Length: 602
Image 1 (cartoon, one colour):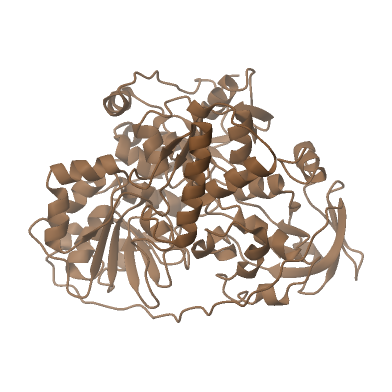
Image 2 (tube, helix red, strand yellow; image 1 turned 180 degrees about the horizontal axis):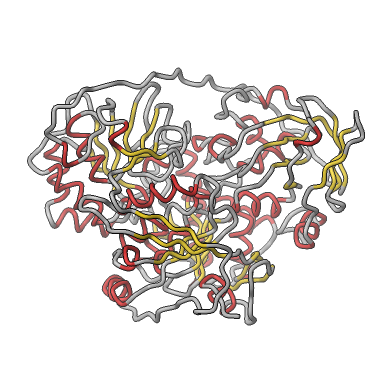
């Protein structure tokens, strides 16, 4: 039996044939930490006395706060600079842009290569047929020190994009249509390979747009097979000649997913969940207060050129703010040389230096209470881009909407459309401080349960991005669930030894280790969920937080019930009734890491 694309890449980096379900040590070609997470990587390396395996394969990228405007970020960045200088590690500093784009454009990774980063969208490199994985700071510290990480080879599904692509339909529209079709957990635990004539015709920017939202579908990675056109684009960017990598014809796939884009119109994600996708025509005329063009999903030169074509000769609507952030400094400079920056400025837009922008707190792209934003980003979870509401759309739709002051398609930019508004939400109140209790690590625990009966609880709901510069685990607990409606006072009420029971796809979203460590800070003994986001699962295992996957609905649990959880036996018992539910027992890898107290402990 042949190999899928992910199996082929991983096999080439393990020295043996690797199939779905295997847990292997994967050699990592490019190891990257950002200003978010990077300081914790340094802290882990120094705490455990670890060295650097290969400085030439190791990089830092400062893209979360490229202005250095936040004091904690500035301190973290400087700590990283000093460490990098000491160990001869290349730093792509605050002037350079988004690390994943730098990795592609600078040739840090090519087709068939492997990469890890403290960026949950490291899987963006699937656009060029490479393997990238966002991981937490312990994983990345381990990769820095050992040159490899453990990984469970995922099964693969094939996605066929079928039908005829209509004029005016962007890669973002196709991506949102796919997301709406499969849902927020539709690719949970899977790699996916993209096929079909539409996909084959996509250029690099379009492939990046689609690949970048694998995380929003809970996928490990979305992979394209690089064709001659993509190899030529990469050579023009990097000066390097790459070989194509492809799956074997007799590879085994879990299933096929087919999406027909015939008749597809511009799409948007409604505020609150990227997977809540609807045709733009359903919300046409919804008033906006701000618009954002950028992010790792739609901050490429082609994206900005498309937006500028709509903005040229027009002005941003009164009382609307348009914010633009190119993905990299090279893209920024090209836009400057070709007059695109002038077009943005003449239209009334605010242009920031290259970086992640609205996806990180304190940068261009944040919004306030009651503010409605249309954004080209990849996430619109509550609180992710501020305290307002965010629609996701293509660069063309964002530009057209900025001109009119309400959601509208480019081909209707001059139409007479009735305006409507969204209901406003109040801002959340800040949470008081709480000291962090100590925890224990037995293989069987008993505790009081908290029922968090929701699916797709993302890392911003668990631990908001405004607190990402915190590096002291003792401080993290006070922010736990601070952005999850109904649980804002969780840090005040939880007690050491409590157990959290949640729904499916818990911890989807970003790669932040904070969303794990905040539970450890509070002394939460374990988190049980129907399923976990892939990066979150790794982060918890590596941190020694005993997470358990299983469905406890048959136990009919309520807040305050006492349960016993047996990690090795894979069993949860409700003490009041004696009823038991089977859950997934710890794997050998999880048990070994848990027993020694974390990945980095000897």
